[in-house]
Image (tube, rainbow, N blue to C red; front, side):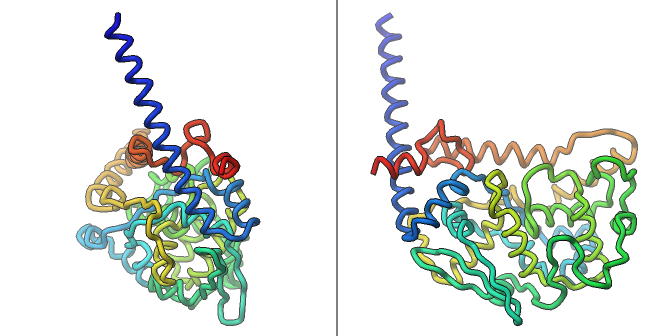
Length: 341
């Protein structure tokens, strides 16, 4: 019995020590972010709307895998749209700094394309769209694709049936559209679209109608002004507190371009498990073959990514580094610590 009490006391002590370490690290993080904002309005907006939001886990592609798999059509589409630099981007990112910057993002349109303003390291930074284009080798040519999906007069005759025929969709247009019912190269394009080019949360195994239109335009060879489209995609979810944050690696590239000090900022490492490579392509092909044979199989690739994301977040919490989606019950919020300070 005494032995059990000793073990229980030790567990309580260890848990308390772990909690204190997490709180101290959280206080350091809060102090860092408080110094990041010297504008109370931006700080409050970050606390209320951005602090707890998770990130869309970015993905990147290995072009050698595409070449060895004879996906010439997909390679040509990505290169024609000047997207190869963006979809191969595998640099690490800083979630707190990214979310802090995006919480204050504002776009100003001009005759030469426009620029964005964001609060970075205590002051407003101005970033022209042309600078974002040069960071990823994106082109400023083409249609400034806006929400509403009518980007150009030449697209007025577009129909969903045309889009589905172009991407080779083999199912009925009833209910959800499954990625297992398109050719493998289109499925890879859809993954890149929903994880990297225009990332979003939710079920990446479902093709939305907007996805069909964008892929139709890309396959038809219509030029899209991707820097403008990316900024519009950022702003689209800016005020929705329940939507995950996107473009972590891209914003970290912007920090490098501006020379922003990232010393001491929490960093998320993008490893090879986030790469679309030969193994991923083989799995996609197997799923599509089984689907064509009438086998209703769970999307193993999607499940694998979700399991890895949960494992990564659990590992961060065990090391005393709260993951982006940790709940307020597991750690004190920034508001609580600021009030205590």
